[in-house]
Image (cartoon, rainbow, N blue to C red; front, top):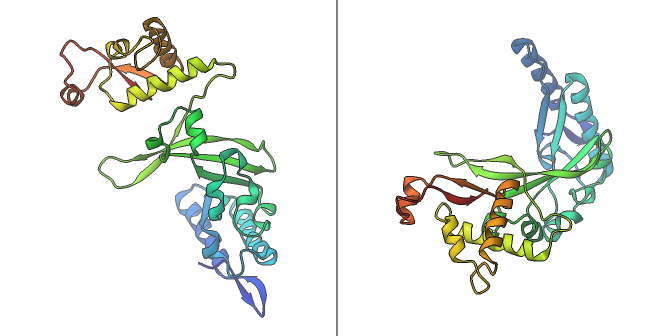
Length: 262
């Protein structure tokens, strides 16, 4: 797997890089479709040298650049981050958090960071603590020919009948810039109630918990208005309960719909 190795103390390429180029070309000839993406996973497995040494890392990036040039494919190198990054907030993560020499980033056209959702981000996006570990963010921390920053959220979803999870893109909603704290607090309470019984909460249940002394600490009118607003922006949806949900939550046959968090 080594793309580079040390010869008399100097970093040099191995035969593996050329082998990847030949395999990519053969695949293109046989299939009639050019290889467009080559992923090298991961940096420590293919680097025959010190990941903290700029010379060793630069030689590796030379090989990767050669593969990209000869095949016409985008080459992505997977690298890890040090454990210290776990204590950082999402908006604090940057290109310096990629483990090893800065040459990894300096010699790349673009660099991306993937990390799990932090507690503060979960609070902003109305995600419960139990669900937080299922969310992953991918953000550009360097881009030579595009805008850096921003990013995309994904949710880890386990495939039915398979013990394998995939990342599916999701759109998360955060409080509006000038939204009143009372509205944000009501949304949090509504989401909490709906998530306590997934598929078992009706609009009638929420109305029963309204009032200044109720769990929701808001009038019935305010609850109705906020539920409608949350459905409009995609935080909640109203659907028909499944037979399993009717049985689990002992829903009367007259119940036509339940509220669920998206």
